[in-house]
Image (tube, rainbow, N blue to C red):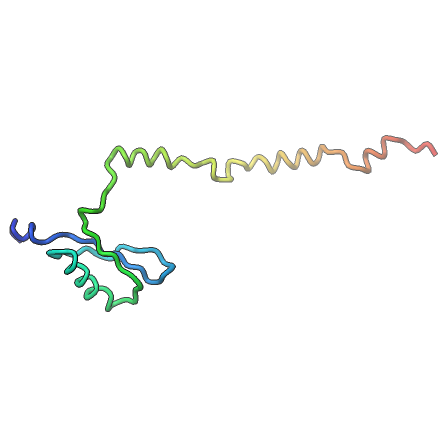
Length: 116
């Protein structure tokens, strides 16, 4: 394809949804001269093969990717160790020790002695 062909065609990404409750999934990319033809091509190439309830056809240039700095920021945001319960494993032992150290009613009553 020459330079003129590259200018004429645009890249589109096609996403589909199988049921109303399912998420959209990327299916394939296609080349089309405009958005309307891209939708027709997506329907012809995809919708007759699989049952779908909806498709999205998006111009690839409209999809924004993260740059390197933004990706690095995601790594910092991914530190969610506090949400995992594995850090609280010591609590079970601590609670057991606490329960064993507690005084029960029988023990407290035994302190009073039997003065009868």
